[in-house]
Length: 477
Image 1 (spheres, rainbow, N blue to C red):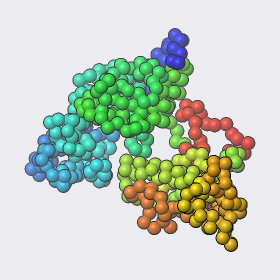
Image 2: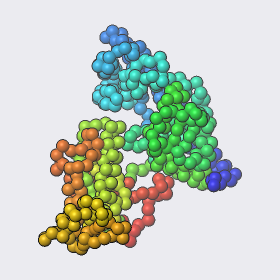
Image 3: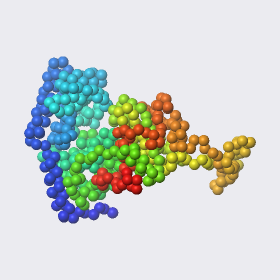
């Protein structure tokens, strides 16, 4: 059943809201002129630095939202790409890229993605100087950023002042509902994906009118022209126009796409400027969470791991893998996890698990073989021997197999998880070489921290981003 079409009154209000928000977030002509000056000056200065050191630099360009004017003013970082010959070695690429960045940027800081890049300041702006290769075919990149000049050219040819304004409006909307940003931490819509969607549909409104009818997975690629090797749980499929083998939406999670689909329908029915307000950071204190657990009759177990020296895009996929592995172990141990969430502090990783109960039953039903096979004798001998720890049985179960009931040694969630931890695979960089480096505690024993507050809000504060705070429970939390 399709979503109902908003009436003319809602459409008129959406016109007013979008015009007001567009005017509010539009950069001033003076600011746009300043950004244009910085773009030109950066490229000139990099060129001069390359000539001074006889660098093999092929081309320097500013690309992305700073080049096209599609940025949100309070979120503007300038991406400077330094492109080198495809036959240059990776070591030399890193060396030249970092050297040229240091020659131009102040307060330089080496960051790491696929390979090192430099973050620094230039005339008051934050600039990322990223090395890559000047490839002739964007469908055969040598590094993750080699398609960027082709993305720049594709969008520059198709965007008009009207679509640029609509891109800003869309980014503001997506950010307000918490689905903007393709980083592994966010799993949302990249800026490039937002721009492609606006170019395709023409405006935020028309995009939302289409999105409210979407069903996951969403196929926007032409039939028969979808990128190959799509993951099983893909959310949205849109082939990169400069590289049809790549899905532009590969980083987007189904949760964030589902949030957009629901937001589209709700906004179109009741538009207001509040839909474009910057999201507030959300956190839940340990004491408030404990009050909620008393009301819910549930239990939270927290796992703390040392934080490895990894960039977020490498860290968060492993952190989510660790969360799934621990939740699966808790389920196998009859502790009935209701949900889990992960977050980070500067020195540690926080994984929180809500369980239906803090301990499993004292009695374990031990499965035995069906009568008539060789192992029956061994099973009966073990469980009928003097001193066997059987509470009841052996007996024949309803399905015809043998069973026996024994007493469990470890019952508490934390003790069970500590015993299982050495055999868990948490991710290449997260599985501690010494399992004792993992701290496993009930929530009441974990000190408050920023990361804990974020994880607890994700675990116990689930709500639609536009729905406001949940009502207070009986405990007043």
